[in-house]
Length: 612
Image (cartoon, rainbow, N blue to C red; front, side):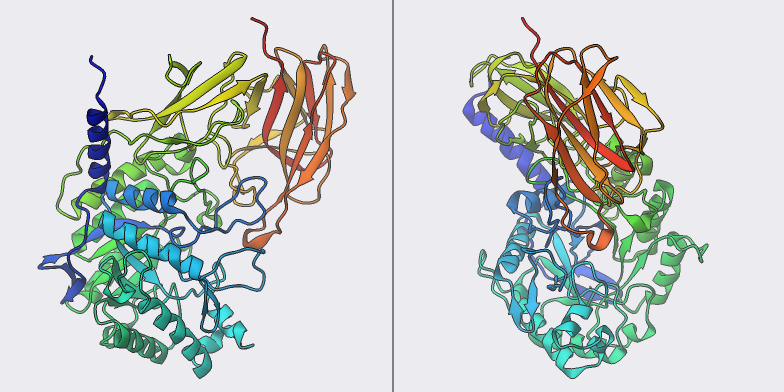
């Protein structure tokens, strides 16, 4: 086969990019005709996802990071919206406009800083979201205020004025404060496009709030106020637990919505509830299922089929998480989902086997195209990933590609090759907030690296080249998904997959108590190690020892660093990194002994390279 010319390579990359984008650009505002949403003269229907990190990330959880909040960057925004398009979605629902909280960690970005005070940096990020949404042909549902504590909401607006959160619905000062936020948002001019938000076709509708329980008078007043500023966009009632009769009588409310999660007091399925609600809304107003989730794939499929069969406008699964700019994905376990379900990733992986992620995601894509009367097109070959800077061959990461199922890593002695395979079938979902690949087989020397993405359609063009990377030692990396890399165990230590949110989303850890131990055997002498631990209760220091023969051990001094930013809303456990270096003497065994309740998420052991 002849090598591709630069023009051919560029053309392939462009075609892959445009295939993901599919039908970019937006020509019309979404309107209402009877009980249908309309795009021009055609009904507008969708199955897609809530994207709760799109306007503010709450899942930035590397081991050493003490603040989980940050704004998404352009790579992350594009990855999220391009993923939705590849899955057949044309709508996403963001989370709310965040409000500063009194217990926010220092440096936490929020949209609303006080009455009439706004964070320009956060709104510039929303400018970028709207710009990319227009490019990708994705509509946004934007809730204006939260009923809950997670990102700040009505309680925080009330707190600015030393009032109770329930006063938010009736107090004139609080209502006027909220109107200032609406005025700022709706009439804002996008700094990137020059288009006012009220004139932006990427906005499907403004939602009065997320799962709110206001008075009818509040809903009527807020809806009228929005309409007085914005005559282009629809308004969705944020009362979501069940349809409210008065929602159909307020002229300024265009769309009604419900959210559905398992309820032990109900035996009715989501599909049955949607059928009942569709009958209530029929001929009156468009109806959207704003959130649904935390049930098995068969029930999720039945829900999507009910959305299609009833003729309602659409439904959104809770929830999709996009890629992390630092490599891999963002993760969000759902404690209210029985500690089983996590935020979904496309195209899914075996890490999500417990909640059938691969099959569910494939099913969503089928229904997302079916509701639009389309057959899903073939998934394109992934675009080239972007390899991030590499300082250690044991810590290689990259920004992944939409639709990629796995990756290969290639190594070369020079920037132009010759290239050999260092790793194949690498799952970027395997490790959470860790380096994605450890090149254990790299010989001593200086090496260059590149990465390719792979899926059922083929192998991508290579990424950028990074190097030279000096290799002076080898590293055993154990993510403790199982005990396959452990030489021996003592006591009752076991792998656990529970309480991942509290464990900073580490999906699998070794959990044990006093007297339990892990023993590692290395092929060459140990030079140093790092042990990533989490303490559900009090910190009880590890005891580490080394041995030449695996029989006689002697203690080794260990340093530790604590990275606790507080328990936060989820009851985060305390992360502590234990480490030692400059270990001499030829020891090949390392024993890590627990002195109390401890969970170990990752072990790294640096050892000498094998002689040639």
